[in-house]
Length: 502
Image (tube, rainbow, N blue to C red; front, side, top):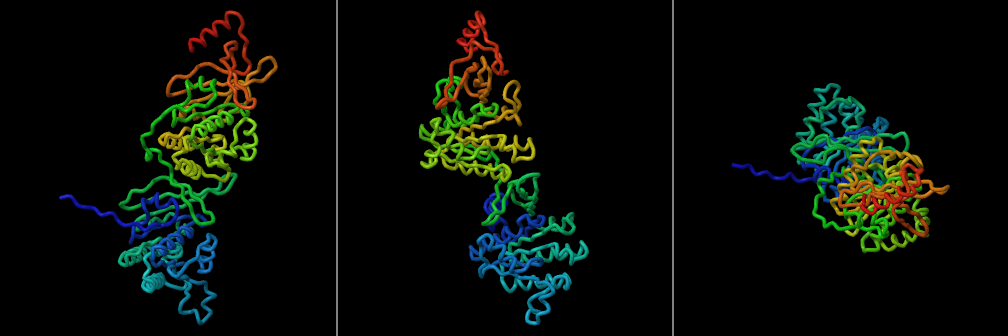
C-alpha cells in the first residue's frame, strides 16, 4: 500500500529571492543554520525572518550573545525597519551592566555562566514569549562555553529537541570565528545556508550564498549572488534556462535597411541571438540601434543594457542618426539601463534581464557590450556559462538578443576578449578597410543558423543614418584591412560569383 506524503508547511523568510531558492521558505518546526564570516549579512537576514513572522502574527525571539539590543535596533533602523511588539530581544549583556543592581536579574554575561545555565535561560525566554520564530546569535559563543566538542554537540541536540517540542522554527547564526572546521551543527540542523564575501582587485565586495543542505527537500543548488542595500538583503537566484521552456511563434525580424536585410537573407529569426563583432568605432552600436528602432516602429518594445557609454551621450549621439531614444523611453517603448561593471555581479545582471522581459511586449534586448560584462566576471569560463543561460532564457521567451563585442586592433587580424560566436545564432562581422587613402567600413554575415544569408561583403557608411551599399565585388582582402583592387577579368569573375550567391 502506497504511503501518502504531506508537504511540510513553510515559514517564508521575507528575503526577496531567498524563498525561491528554498522552494518556499524554511520548514516550520525545524532548526536551520545560517553561517558566514562577519559582515556577510546574517543578522540582516535573521531580522527580516522575524519581521516576516511578525507580519503573519507570529511571536519572534532574538537571542543575542554577541550584540546588544540597541545595536540590533540600529541595524534594523538602517533598513527602515522597526522591531515591534511581536519581536523580543533577549540580550546577554557585557559585565559592566552587572554592576547595576537593578539589572542583575535580567542581564547576564555569557562567559560567567556554565553552558547548561545559558541553555536554561534560553529555554526560559522561549517559555515566556511563546515564540514561534527564534534566532540564536551566535553559536560561536556557545561553542566556546562548551569547551569540548562532545558537550557542545549534546547542548545543540538539547536545543533542537526542545525547539521541536514547541513547534518553533529556529535560525541559528554562526560567524565562523571559532573552530571553522567543526561540522557538528551541519549534521544536526535540518538545513544549512552559507554566506560568502569576496573582495575583487577593483570594485565593491561581492556576496554569494549556497544551500549546503536541506533535509528531505529539493532546493535550487549552486551559488546565488546577493547584495545588502538599504531595505535589506536581495538574493538573485541562479538563472536556469531549462526551467523556462515554452512554445513561441517565431517570425522574421528585419532591420529596416534594405542592404542589411539582404545580407541577412531577409532578416533574423525572432528569438535568436546575434553577435556584432568588430573594432571600436566600426558601428556595432548603431546597427543594434537600427534593430531596436525597427522593433519599436513595428509595435513591440525593447530593452538596452549599456556597460560602456553614458546614457546622455548615447542619446545625443543617436539623435542626429534618426534614433530618438529619449522619446522612445518617455513613451514607455524603450528600457535603457546603464550598468557599472565594477559594482555589478553576474547574478544581478541576469536578474535585471529577466525583469525586463517580464513585459511580454519586450521582444528585443541589446547588451552593449560583452567587454563590459566580462569585466564584471573574474573567470572567462563563468562568462560563457552565464551567457549561455541568458541567451537560452531569452530565446525561449521569443526575445531577439543583440550583443556587441569590441575586438582589439583596428585593421588586419582582430581578436575578441572571449569567443562566444559558437553560442550565437548569427554573427555579423564589421571591419575597417583602406581604399585610395580613405578609411571605409565593411559588413558581412559569417554565420546564420536559420535560413540562408549572403556570403558577400558590403560597404556601409553612417551619414544621417545607416546605409548599406552593394557587394564589394571589385576588391579582394577587405577583411584584412588593405584590399587589392581587381581589374579586368578578375572583376567580371567576382561579379558573376556574387550574382550566383557564391
